[in-house]
Image (tube, rainbow, N blue to C red; front, top):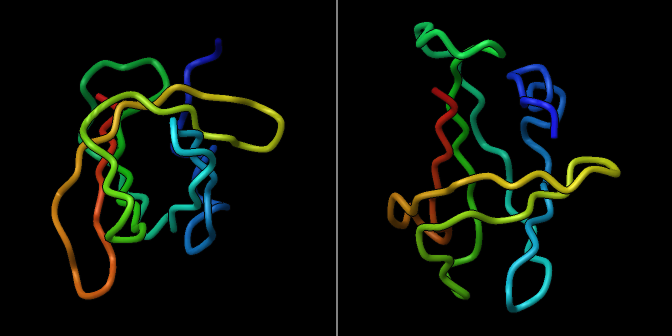
Length: 93
């Protein structure tokens, strides 16, 4: 599995990304893609903020994101609701 970089996500900003869960696929909106100060990670450091439905709630964990034809495991943490959406964060450090 290749290491993901911010370039994998910038073109998807503002678009839905499908996440495979035990409940089936759930689309999450890729709301923010933010570069972070370098941590020494070869592919660079960055942050994703995703917005999804309030229900079903996705607990902290690793989920298979479908990026084109690739299934990429990404660890995601819920941040809490914002209006009608639940916010999630994924950090690449």
